[in-house]
Image (cartoon, rainbow, N blue to C red; front, side):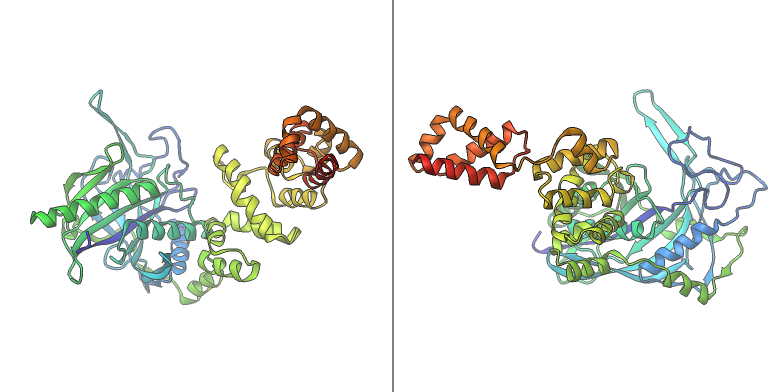
Length: 479
């Protein structure tokens, strides 16, 4: 491995978040009955004419600008010809020699250093259908609902040098798309997919090696694992002096290996020619500037601002800004209660855990910034303990009620009265004479156990500082 380097270029495919398809009015909703969201246009029946979806086009321009690309002066579509069962027209409306945009870049941070990953092109096309294979029955099922959904392809230059770098780059692309709100980036539903072109070469060489294209990677883990395996496989072949085939390979997650699918096509195999049913057109520079000026603050910029303005760590800033909804939640909360460190701890800790457990994004949760601000205020005013706060958090997720209402309804207010606590502590000392003796013998950690017993008896409602204070006084008087 030391004498070789891996060279990777990524093709990211993104479903744009439109209600209708790229060239017809059929629904793009996921999960509809098979073949119910189709029409003569997306099925390519004779005599039909495609009409470009304006929203899809504007989303494509918006994305290209966010990726620092130059927008093409003339927009032209082409036919990409190939025969496959999930492509009913036997061609795909795409863009070839005049893509929507080109010469962009994305900055990534990996292993403590920044690196610029160049983007070769961004182009707009339509998606194909979906084949589902039933190996037991020897049948294949065809669902054409996906046919014609607007698909944006983002093609990088071969600037990536490891599986980890590639995963970071893909995560950055996903974050940018989510910030722009042009895609839901749901990898399980196929809204965000990628193919990787990977080759190896001796270190110091500039020429590219023979590449393999990897498909069927539907998670960040799959991307890392597939590229790591394929890099090792190709290096082993080079060491043995064996030839590497230019081919398309599938990632088999169950076997944790790649396997050949077909010989890799060359560009001329697709017989591109201009799409005769869609006339070339131009987009005015003033429109491009208008779209550019309306772009939101993007993740890398927001991350640096969070570090500077709120003094959060680089790690926390990364986690906060990966998802626009999470970063917005953080800033909305901080506008109510100025406690950035506490907000970060709750957001990336207990709140994130509940969201993961319930498999919901933060923007769809009943828990809102005002709820978190209220919980922090209740802790600060010593109305509730940190342990009780977690119970209140669960209550908000379950009911959507205000934290104060949950505290009152469940009687969760913190016990701060010295007299009441003193009585409870006396009971704990009586029940745990061995711990008392251990403390008298110098085992100071015995007090931790007794504090825990008090908290247990009060179901977490006792003020921990007061419990410690009273315990030490009582134990001190007995020594």
